[in-house]
Amino acid sequence: MPRIIVPAFCAILALGGAAQAASPKDLGKFGSWNAMSYGEGDDTRCYIASRPTSMSPPQLNHGDVVFFVQSRDDKDAHSESSFQTGYSFAKDSMITVKIGDDSFQMFTQGQSAWLRRLEREGEFLAALKAGSSMTVDATSARGNGTSYVFSLNGVTAAARVLEQCDD
Image 1 (cartoon, rainbow, N blue to C red):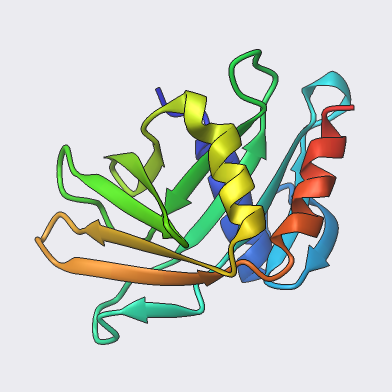
Image 2 (image 1 turned 45 degrees about the vertical axis):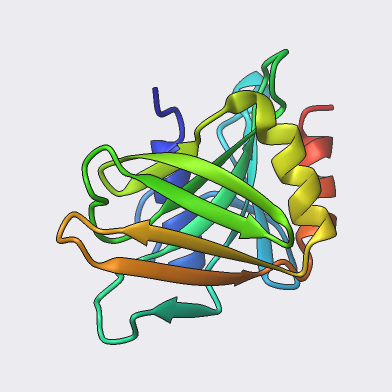
């Protein structure tokens, strides 16, 4: 089940600049990616987040669109990737994420999506670090096909901050 709703909200606030509630701590900007943390002490979580460089179709209202990767204390995965938009996805739909020759599937719920196979998180993070751009294709609840391109400039440096968060 989704465990990333709170950081998604924090990422939107931090990237949008309108933090009225307790805002996340800024850990640095690395190219197109921001590193942040929230919580305190042993409950601190870190995440990296980015907004798309392009959104299609341009005439649609996409709302706040953010892709991020959160640190996680789990023997099976040390990170958890998530994608969030300002609209609801088609019920029971899957999102396709392409990074170079690699392709990943994300399951959807409401306005959020998570990597379908948690055991691929390490592979996904490695693909992010090796790639130059990421394309995310989705379908809205209204049946509109949408596509987003994210720059991966700076993701390797941001991921180092994410990995150090667990230490």
